[in-house]
Length: 161
Image (tube, rainbow, N blue to C red; front, side):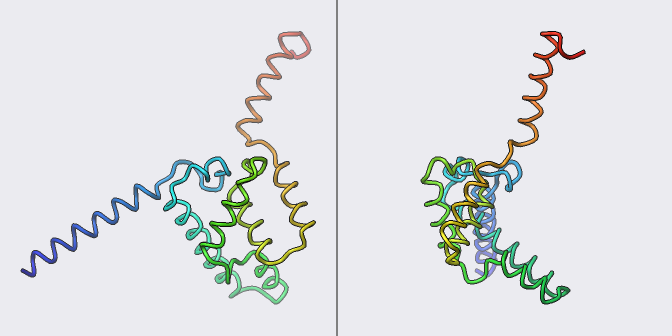
């Protein structure tokens, strides 16, 4: 009977790991995800993404604060996600991406816009931050492709040797 329980527990545990790996496995660098990707994520992946980010920020700020002086600790408080829940962030990011013009803003940046909203930052400052984030440059790969096409065109018309 004890062997059956152990086998059942091992099977259940293996199933949980297999399921979670399939739900949370993503391709590419998670820092590159934007609103288009976010809106396509299954609910479990959204919660996993936000949870992972919160844990990462907590671990990083806690470790750095051990060595920081008062000025540096004040700066760390500005990036901290303490006292903000996973649900608040997930709901805020969902609301942020309902505006189609925000969909090219990276998820990491959208989370900090949500943090600003939750923290009561002045509306004009938040709007300025969103405008700035919308103007972020193209990824390097996209820029290089455009540059190559431009150089090829310049060679074709004789302006580039």
